[in-house]
Amino acid sequence: MNHYLKMLLAAAALLLCISTAQAVSTGQNGVIDLTGRLYQSEGENFPASADSLTSFLSRLHEIRSGKMLGGSYWFYTELDNDSGNSEWVLEPDYRLIDRVEVRIYGQNKDVQHFVTGYRAGHDYMLHYGKNIHLPPGGHAKVLIHFENLHFKFVPEVRLYSEHDYQHLVLSENVLILAALGALLTLAIYYLFINRITHERTLLYYAAYLIACFLGWAFMSQLPAELFGWHDLRWQYVPFFLFPVFNTLFYLDFLRLDQHFPKLTAISRINIVLPLILLPSCFINLSYAHILMTAVNSLWIIVALVCGIASLSSGFRPARYFVLSFIALLLPMIIILGANWGLPDLIRNSKILVLLGNTVEGILLAFALADKIKILTEEKNQALQRMERMLILTRTDHLTGIANRHAFDQHFECVFRHPDFADDPAQLVLFLIDLDNLKYVNDKHGHAKGDELLSLFASALASLESGSVSAFRLGGDEFTLLAHKYNEDGLVKSLELLEKNLKAQGFGETGISYGIACACESSSAKDMLLIADRRMYDNKTSKRKPRVTHADQWNAAPGIA
Image (cartoon, rainbow, N blue to C red):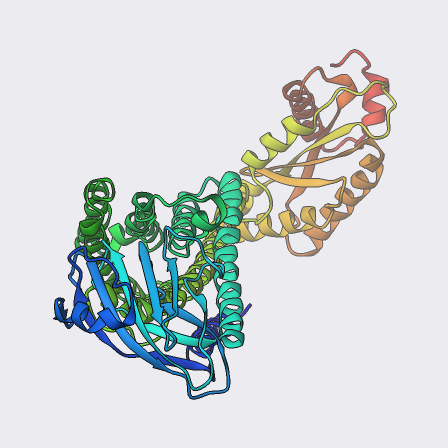
């Protein structure tokens, strides 16, 4: 897929996630944002009736925001139902809160009471909302007690029509489960690829995705919903591991140590610091949340700087890496800001961050695919260069045909003593000498001699086929390897070749050759010696008619 198309799809996915999250968060017609007063709780009990509320609230200390390390708070507001709807859902904040207790004091002195939060039962999966009844035209006073030990926040209380809240829960749960499923699927896929390739970059990437899956599964309260596991100490462990595995991934992926040693040293802080601070999850959860926020903020900034630096150096896959961290950074600014006490810009920002994290994971997969493509291209180019070098080592520089090295390798490989002496497919060796090459060099110069060698080698190369191979052994020696059934045809071709050389201005030259057959040889070396002896005999008896190998074999059967 074209990389521009990939980037377009990724951007579209990010915009879709943001727009979807915004739609399910702010597009409800029956949503009422409740404003009220926040008080510090000192362990007081709920007032028994609405008549006691005024004196109860007067004894409390009103505050504007929560403590950085969490705490216990009272929130008071009043409701007026101006609609025709009587069935509502009260959601006392969407963030992870240990315990929320709500009492609604009606006009007829009736009191609705419920408990929700992380450690309580839920009417709606992964959500804290509880059903309440408020008749049209009714008025109620609402007192909410929050207990949270993890981060600073100003509670946000919303009232939804029951229908709208059901739609909201369904939409958000689909997004949560789809994002978690995508993270887990990518992790399993790249673990499988890692088992095949043993590429550690893939292992780090898969480990990072698994940490993302576990962290957001805990944050979305899936273990609490499915298994009743409410141990918050383990919830923060994956978030401390985010920077560790991702930094290991991008150090290897971006090849940072080769080009940016200083950034490599700085990046290692993202590995060491989270591991040092991770035990805070089991020592003090309040501090663990702040420390987790700090190490993740540092990690995102350093990783983005490293990605931009790598991209500026010309490393193409870094463009997906930078885009992935932008996709993560935008929603992370919202949730990390809320962790430091800043107001949330949208409702349920953790879903937007989860979606951003999922888009980041997909973009990192694009980056990996791009890098694998580049490595494959580099590997293919290296193989092509190696192949060309191997060809050069097996090719005679002057004539362009295979050289002595190639002959030795090929000859040893194809030599095999035949089962029958008359086997037409057995190996036949022609050892050929180009006569009077020295004379041509001395009389006409080496340039003319090189021309003769090239012309002769080219003629031999024209005889090559699937069963015939030509080689230059060195100097004026050449050889042909063929099958027995090629022998007569090659003998005629060599005779014609000699005539053509004379016709082309090399009248003083000639061809001497000896033929050896595999059936008369105990080894490749022995076969070469036989052909060499016969070539010498042929050279010394140039004025005598040449005889074929069959004539030599019949006349001298004892020769081996």
